Length: 157
Image (cartoon, one colour):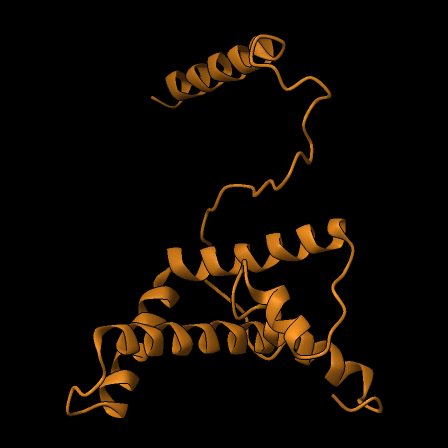
């Protein structure tokens, strides 16, 4: 990688590799000359990448990306010469490229994701856990949250 790369281009390039895969993105970035971040920063980045992948997968965008990857695979291999493994590999590569490109465009403010998709909060490692994560220690808290949810459901009916 050129040492004289513009800091913005450097950030964009690193993010491109990160967003290729929620779990392998840091390896891809490292393979391309980027130094891995601290464990804490890495967890935050994995959470951000996974959040985008889930938002795209849960919404209409995921269906469009999957269809486009399939159509492109069929275009590249119209005679079905790919083995099943090669075909799946091509679909995965095209999907990863699409998601990473979409993230780049979103990060630069060129496009936005207008679909509001509800995904759960993503917790990695032991982030946000009580010092004692024992079920019995937290039972009162868990039970009260469950009962509060039931009350809200009854009020909604």
